[in-house]
Length: 98
Image 1 (cartoon, helix red, strand yellow):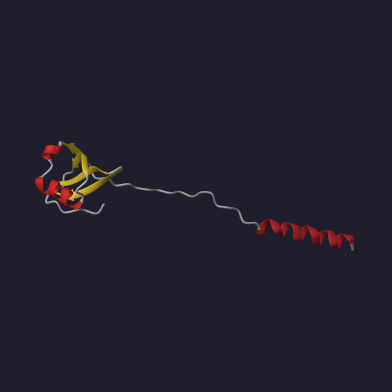
Image 2: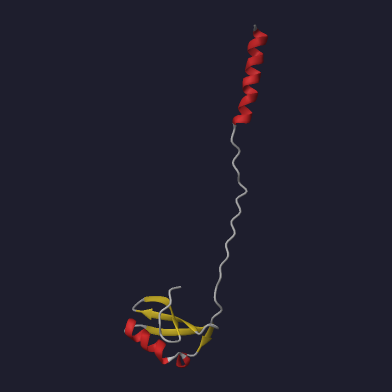
C-alpha cells in the first residue's frame, strides 16, 4: 500500500510541473518616428501671411525662431506669457495640426 501511495504522489507531483506558466519575457517593441526636416530661417524671411496669422491668433506671442521644410510649412517657436511651444503653418498663414 505504501508503494501505491508513493507512486500516486510521484505521478501527481510530476504533473504539476506541466501546469506551471512560464512568463514570456521576449517582448520586442519597435517604434518609428518620422520627423520632417526643418531648416532654420531668419525671422525677417517668414512670410507676411504667417506673421499676420500669428498676431491675429496670438496677439501677445513672441516669435523666438522659425523653421521651414521642403513643403514650405513653417514651424514657429513662440512664447506666450511664460509658456513656450511650437506652432505650424503653411506659407499662406493657415494653421497645420501636427
